[in-house]
Length: 391
Ligand SMILES: Cc1ncc(COP(=O)(O)O)c(C=O)c1O
Image 1 (cartoon, rainbow, N blue to C red):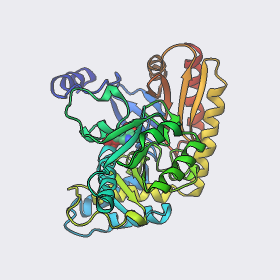
Image 2: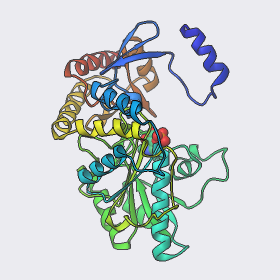
Image 3: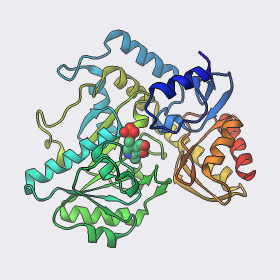
């Protein structure tokens, strides 16, 4: 089937919810992939932060294939080894007490919202259910996580949205104080707003927020769906903000290319969710968890150091471009603000020149594989800088 025929089928049968780039990718290896016409690209997108180890990492593929050939699924009615191993590793490496596995970022956030509300219900009763989220945040596409998302543009069409969310301006303790009355059980935040334009929270704000919440027994839910699993140069971004939130959600990079979501909770919340309070048919699927176990095994201290070093290489290269107004983010999660031209124009010109990049609102966004060889990173950056300065 050629590209035109594939596009025709997409047009005919897939709901038009995505603005697709005009490329059909057929294979990938490491930090490179190839389209249906045989054109090769360096990948700075990782399928929106998912392929942490790049395309088709050998150990990841073997673990997934071996598990698929042994036991592909059996449901949570039975014990399996890969998910308990993954849970143990996550707890040991993060300091969390318990994990729940789902299938996506939105679902992980739904789980976190349920944990927070259940904790508050058990301790304070029915009236303390509100959750404060930050303006310009993004927490997912389900009806509840759209409601949690602090952007009006997402609060349309699908009424009625789940109630109980209050939006506060990011980096303002005054706004947080105004938003938090005695009906609030939790605050949900991204340390770096990814979809919102790669905008980090101020460290002092996070410190003050943590103290404010501790004093009032308001839970902190960190949505690390995009920032987690080494993306920012530490296993969790929270490690760079100096505290462990009560709840952290993960997804994207954890599976290395297969769907997974995780809700991690601290000791205080370990017993909140009892039998039948939550569930997922696919959650903790052995094939997905076998892949995730390889991701975590490879993501050791040395690899995290490399992520920080490569992040610096990216920052140094793009900061030197004439057309770059701002560079934001941490580690290998980078946002580039432009002086001239639009992020969409840059994306298209990079694509034509053999480099895949992302956008986040008006920013160009880079989420390269954490394992990208320095040579490919530098080649990709050369293309990017040329494109940026030609705008
Ligand atoms: C911070 C954050 N939370 C939640 C989500 C939703 O994740 P998913 O698309 O896996 O449901 C995303 C997706 O981009 C995200 O960046």
